[in-house]
Image: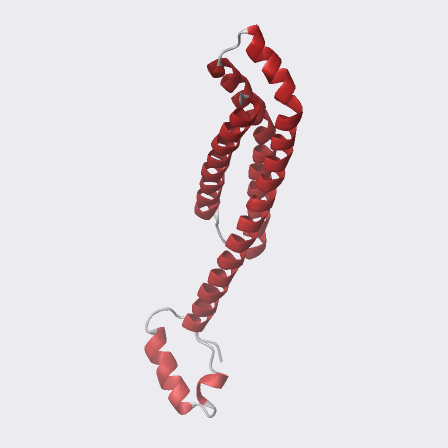
Length: 162
């Protein structure tokens, strides 16, 4: 038996489960469906959060090691620029631009991938995930900016050492 009316569904379900042999095991009410969806979405969001953290750390650590290995290779070129008379501020601008370009493509690809994946998920599940998508992209951008600033400062220290 399936109860579909929303009004007084809880009271009606309670009365039916008391009279039907087998009780709650044989009756499926409207509220039970929403309770299951609530818990399923909670698990879904938790797993999505864990996966996004893992992918962000993997992406940023790959970028970090690539950029810092480039810094070791570019150290001599920046020492020549210092000898020519380039100030630390000008070297810093050059480094921030170079590191920014390295962060730009993975950031854009990550945001586009997330938007397309959430769009497909919305079609499959018949739900709207627009607000979680906006929160996720915002968090991704904030973390990316923090990593960008940190890596740029490390790069500057490496190439501008005396």
